[in-house]
Structure formats: structure tokens, C-alpha cells
Image (tube, rainbow, N blue to C red; front, side, top):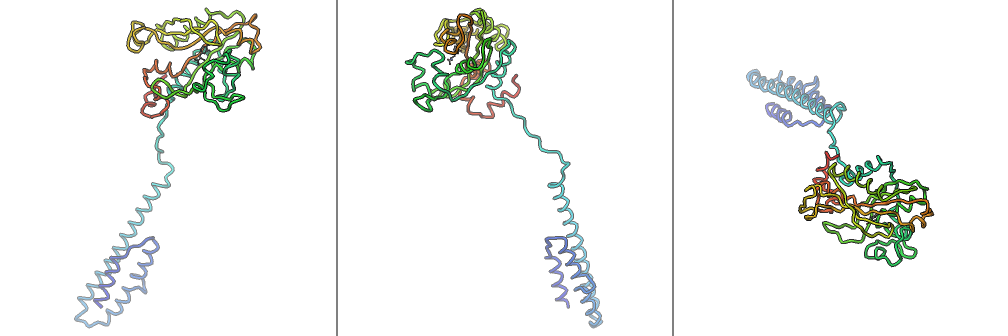
Length: 341
Ligand code: DAH
């Protein structure tokens, strides 16, 4: 009998249930009416009186061990069930907060430029990135042998007829003149492509903003005043501009626009290479040939156009010296613009 009691004690200790129902089954088998313990009690009645004391104690120990073990296992099972419910099913628990993203510096600057010109009555116009020769070159008065058409600069998608990635946003000028009669006042942000080796100061993809204003009696002075307003809005009230004669096939006369260096205030520093001026865009009066090519009468209408690189403006505003940073999308770089604008 002692052996039997000891074996049952071992079974109590080793019992490891997977589910609550197993604990109940175990209880019935051990402590139930027809269970192991009652069977032993039956046997106990028949043992010799001198063994009763010892065996009685053993039986009590077994009963206590079984009862306690069952109670402990029940509690443990209950706790794990509660934990489960809390971790997986409590829909009232607060969610984990998502981190807010930030705008890309190119988008920030683009939006700001668009906003400045929209105050002057310009609306945003768009055009395709994959273009034909007419919209990128021919309608803009590029002579057939112009080097910009060369394979060196332009990514061609197809030859004869030429389909290519636009090399400048000036193509949107042509698209707009096709759609719209003067007065025209549009600002055209977009991505452009050139076959350039990638370095800190050049990239094969970059962004430009184009402006076009055509109406009766539009003058060079109107252009200068509009661009001065733009420079002050972007670089601060102190900003001044100067214009240097230049050449573009689609404007006559043409100019490059410099803004006074916003770092040294025009005194001369490393960024402006001691000149006090920073080049920011090209501009000019729309060439009569361009108006004619787009069915606008140059005897009645005149206009001006300008174009600038958004990366260039962003570099000057934020002091970023390596163009490639704008394309790598390293979050450590981008997070620096969280609070900008
Ligand atoms: N399209 C020129 C470029 O990519 C920029 C430009 C210069 C645009 C003069 C214009 C302009 O509209 O009038 O370099």
C-alpha cells in the first residue's frame, strides 16, 4: 500500500495539464467518489491495526498534496488566460503612436515658390516627362544642330521620330500655349532628365520650375519686378537681384539672374566665391519665333519666361552642398526639415 501511495504522490507532482478540462479529469480520477484515494481508503479499513497510524498519515499527505496541487494548477491556468485576453483582445488599450513624416526639402521649396507666384496670379501647369522633339526643342526655337539635342545631354527613348525625356520644363510652355490663348500666366514645376555623371554638383534627374507670362504689352521691366518680388519672398526682404546678358534659343533678349548672397549679405564669402552674388535662374522675353510656332501673333502679344532649378534654390536656402543628398532619402537628412516652413 505504501508503494501505491508513493506512486500516486509522484503522479500528483508530475501532473502537467495543457487545458483546464484536464485538471478536472485529474481531480475526479484522484479525489472523486470512485477515485484512487477512496479506493485506498477502502483498503485501509482492512489493514492490521498496528499499521494504521503510519498508513493513515501517508494517506492524509497524499490527499493534501493532491488537493493543493489541483488548486495551484487551476489558479495558474486562470492567470495565463487573463494575460492572454489582455494582450490580444483588449480593444480599449491605447494604440502605439505612428511617427509623423516630414515633407521632402524639394517639395517644401517647390510649394513655397508656387505659393509666391500664385500671389501674382500664376496658376500651376503640367506636362509629360516623356516628350517629343517638338515640345522640348523645335517649338522653342532650338536650331537643328543645337548641342542640347545631342546624345550627350538628352536621354532618348526612341529615334526617328524622336521621343525623349524632357531636359527642361520649358516644354510645358509649349504645352500651355497649345491649350490656352493669351493672357497666359503659368508656373510649371516638374522633374527633368539629363545625361550627366552623378556628382555632388550634378545629377541625371533634377527639378525645375518654369514661369511664363504672355499678354499685350508685357515688358522686360515687368519681368524684373516680378523676379525681384520672388527673390525677396524666398531669400528675405534684404535680397537684391542683378541681371546679366545671356543666351537661350527661346528668349530674346535673355538674361541670367543673380541674387545677392544671403549668407554674407553681398560682402563676399566662400559660398558666393567672393562675388556677393549667387546665380539662381535664366530668363528673357519670349522670342517672337516661339510665339509664331505656337500660333500667337507677336505683333499683338509679348511675354517673358524664366526657369530655375529647385535643388539650386533649396541648396542656397538650406546650405546643403551635396546634390546627391536630395535623392538618397536618408531619413537622418530628411528629418532635419521636420519643422521647416
Ligand atoms: N530651360 C532653361 C534651362 O534648362 C532655363 C530657362 C532659361 C528657362 C530661360 C526659361 C528661360 O524659361 O526664359 O537651363
